[in-house]
Amino acid sequence: MSQSPQRSAPSQSEGDVNLSPRRTTWQKESLDDATRELLADDARWFLHQSLSTPCLNGVEHAEGIYLVDLQGRRYMDFHGNNVHQVGYGNPAVIAAVKAQLDSLPFSPRRYTNRVSVDLAQRLAELAPGTLHKVLFCPAGTAAIGMALKLARIATGRHKTISMWDSFHGASLDAISIGGEEVFRAGVGPLLPGTSHVPPPGEYRCLWDCSTRGGCDLKCADYIEYVLAHEGDIAAVIAEPIRCTPYVPSRDFWPKVRAACDRHGALLIFDEIPTCLGRTGRMFACEHAGVVPDMLVLGKGLGGGVMPLAALVAREDLDIAGHVALGHYTHEKSPVACAAGLATLDYIAEHKLVEHSHVLGEHAILRFREMQTRHPLIGDVRGVGLLLGVELVTDRVTKTPARDEADAVLYAALSRGLSFKLTMGNIVTLTPPLTITQEELDRAIDILDECLREISRTG
Ligand SMILES: Cc1ncc(COP(=O)(O)O)c(C=O)c1O
Image (cartoon, rainbow, N blue to C red; front, top):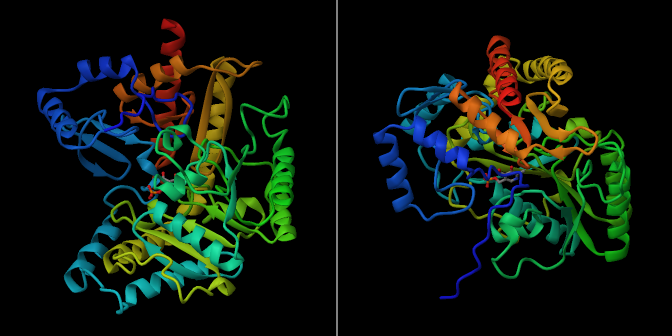
């Protein structure tokens, strides 16, 4: 068996790569024997893989905005893999799932069922433009695969443009268009014809601009350059708002949309982690000022309970009736779709999209105030409840404060706040949209306190 070279985990990734010595110390000081045994069993029986096993801690319970570990400690979960828009164990979602389990737990292919049709119709009604045709599958990665296939069939081309540092899932087709080394390296040949371009707002700016976002339109020009020079591009595929988080400047997407139209390429938006109110709008593309040709949704669509993703495509792209685009066994899962419908109902009834917008603005104001007191905070950004606080050792050079960010991560964990670090130095905060302002303020107070502590001890 050939051994691939052992790679160290990259520190700049959208994934949470954290295997630092502080993690070992935190585990030593914080975990009891039963938890240690669970972690050892997990490491014994699961194939180890980057970004997951070995694990940080075990969970026993999840409710609302909280994860509860085996020792009964509660953590406000400001990460949640972006599945928890409506909170963990949302009673409306759980009730819908239980009722569905009692009536129709599975729907074999060749049959359809009311609940999956209703969810498809609801998404089509909510989506912008003529995004009126839907396919479901159990994972975001699989939905990306369906979008890539449909783009090939619709255009008769196979090439794509996607962004460096992006993530679209872990399957071979998704990592081919993805831009993270941790997923792409060491697995052999990837899909042909996948051009990568720098993402807008690139912190390692190719164009040497001095302000974040200053190079966005150069990035858009570069996309058009590749569309023209490479030719035969089937689709440009990207997240309209990156989870780093980064919201491109206002003219970026309209420029890319126009370039796609000029060159006959489709525009596919991956909103798997950012859909359903996360950004203070139902869909992240509503901030982009353009309508894509295909929208890919996932994660929170299953209400934080069921695996569910969707491809929502332009009505006139319903031209692949002769091809199996997905053919997933759980393609019309009544239980997952019941969770999806209950989720959309809950979001509407509780005005979570508006709530996300209002709380997001409140959080940004608080972080900006903190920035005046904490030199470590280099940038504060985000939209809705997709928030990022970038820690730097020097605001001019924007040198990432990775060690300090790591210290903040564990200091916060010990105070009951869990979040992810993106690129090693961006405190990325995506709480459930059900969070109250008081809870959000408590989390921000914890961060404030941790930053004070790190500055004192640093
Ligand atoms: C932007 C983006 N695309 C695709 C995926 C893959 O989704 P899934 O894990 O459901 O396959 C993810 C998951 O983190 C994601 O963040």
